[in-house]
Length: 265
Image (cartoon, rainbow, N blue to C red; front, top):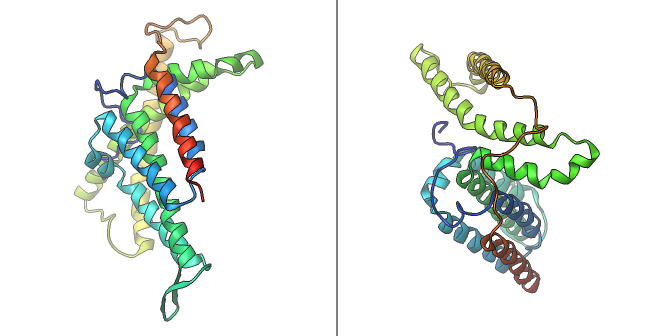
């Protein structure tokens, strides 16, 4: 599971989504997050889900690959769904078996919140899968550019975000290797009582933290010997170009918001 996680990974390609300006994609994600909360009915959530699947299709990222890489998220999704099912007590009773009571509003909220969470995860994953860490850094830095006037270290913040995204798959791969090494030495992490599993995780965390600090130190040393001194006076080798495609993508979101408002209950 660790090896298949897609958080922070970048898949090169030439799809419509790949060719978009990183500033447009980042803006698209933030606007989409706001638009999601307009939906409040089965029709509007169905429109959101269909739109999300269309974005996945245009990115040429296989849906199976996306779902397979988000298995840990689906565990959280199922947990959220069950919480609403069993703890929301409004509306008519749909199922009454002993102490288990499922209400109509609980089922409704469970489905709606799960779909909302799912489309947000899919869209944000498409952003990282179709945009290189360097492009994300440049896009964030340009979008936060106005905050330089209030002495906000925009370049450093963008760089930290980019490095964080880049290190997620690296640390996941490292975790998988350490788990295999521990299992080869007789450690059993995946079975036994919960207390024993917690104890088995400790030998996994220590080498993982050591490896993470070692990688961070190596990165800091490499940046220092190359003369990195922050964003002051730096120029970019790759220039960002805002095109018609990027403007149209944001206009599509305006249209989506209008459709959702029209079909709101």
